[in-house]
Image 1 (cartoon, rainbow, N blue to C red):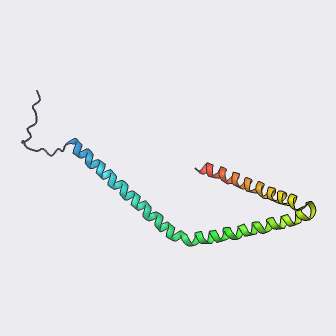
Image 2: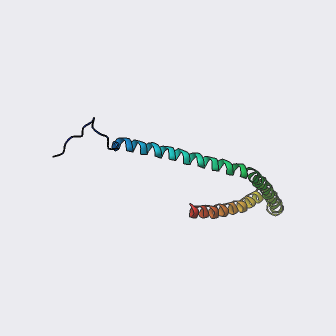
Length: 115
């Protein structure tokens, strides 16, 4: 028959399971916090490297948008001579709307494949 363990007896180096589990949970939390801090540090480092290129891309986007507006106004002016101002606005807006829809649909499909 099994004898109950003597609380004042010699310690054989074993720790209670609850204490081991608590230490495991604490170690896991510390590891997760360290991983999060490492991720933040990497993100900030990448952001510091990317701020100038992102500004250049934003400036290029603004210039491209201005070019598209100039093309749209030119297209409107040409259409207005032949079909009137209202129809020219609808026609040029429709053309750019269809183009925007096709670009959006293509980009969305590619993003859907990636994600």
